[in-house]
Amino acid sequence: MFWNQIIKRLNDRRDRNMNKKFLVTFISCIITIAIIISSCSKSADNAETTSEKRGIPVKVIKVQPQSFVEQIQIVGTAKAFEDVKISAEEGGVIKQWLKSKGSYVQKGEIIALLKDEVILGSYEAAKAQYEIAELNLQKQQKVYEQQGISELQYKTLLYNRDAAKANLEIMKARWERTQIKSPVNGILENRFFEEGEYAPPATPLARVVNTSLIKIFAEIPELISHDVRVGMQARIVFDAFPADTFSGTVTFVGSTVSPANRSMPIEIILANPKRTIKPEMISKILLQKRIKKQAILVNEDYIQLVDRQRQIVYVV
Image (cartoon, rainbow, N blue to C red; front, side):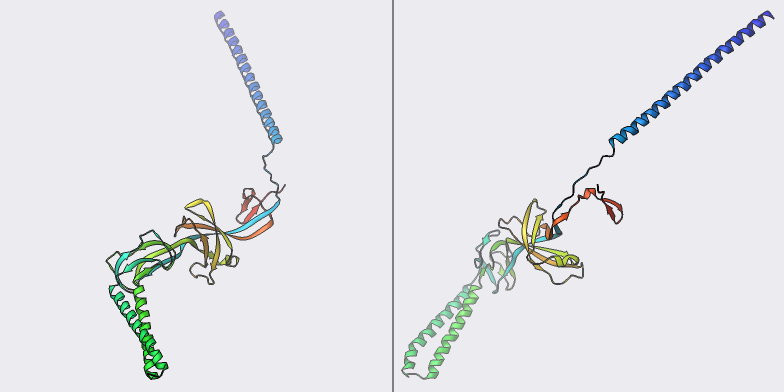
C-alpha cells in the first residue's frame, strides 16, 4: 500500500507537468499567429498607402492644330514609256545587223539591213527611166512653144515623165524598207532574227524600249475616283528602292469603271534619266487628296477601341 501511494503521487505530478508544458506551447502559438497577422495588415496598409501616393502612370500630350495631308495609297506597275516591236514591211533575208542588243538607238537610225540587190536594181532602173523622161520633156518643151509638135505629143511626154517619177518614188520607198529603222529613241532590247534568216513581212524583227520616261499603271476604287484627276502629283516608292521616293504626274484617268473589280485605270508619268527603274517593277503610289491646315491630330496609340465600331480618347 505504501508503494502504491508513492507511485500514484508520482503519476499525478507528471500529469501536472505535461499540462503546464502544453499550455505554454499553446499560448506561444497564439502569440506568434497574432504577430504575423498584425505584420501582414501593416504591410497591406503600407502597400495601399504607397500605391495611393504613386498613382497610376499616365502620359499626356497637348493637342494643337497643325497641317495634315490626306493621301490615297495604291499599288502600280512600271511600264516603258515607249515599247515598240519593229516589223519589216518588205520581206527579205537579214543582211546585217548594225546595232547590237542593249545598245542605244536614235529615232530614224538604221539598225538592220535586208538583202536589197533586186529591189535596188529596180530602183536604179526606175531612176534612169525618170531621168530620160525628164530630159525628153525639157527638149520638146521649146519645140512645143514654137509649135513644132502638137499639144497631144507634148502632154504625152509630160504624163510619161510624171508616171516615171511616180514609179521611181515607189521603188525608192520599197528600197528604203529594206533598211530597218528605229521609230523611237531607246534601247535595242531584243533581236528576233539572226543574219541570214528570212524575215517575213509584218513580222517583228526587233524590240526597242524607251525607259527615259516610265509609265506607272494603276487602278483606283470607284469610291475615290472623284478625288483623282489629271495633273495630280504623286509620290512613288518602288519595292526595289525602298529608301528612295520619286515624283510623278497623273496623265490619264479612265472614264469607265471595270465591272470585274469596280476600279478605274490611271497612268502616271515618271522621269527616269538614269534608267534605274525597270519595266514591270512594283511600286507604292501616294496621291495627295487634300491638305487640312488646321487639323486636330491624335496619335493612334492614344485611341482605344471599346466596342467593335466605337473608339474613345481620354481628355484631361
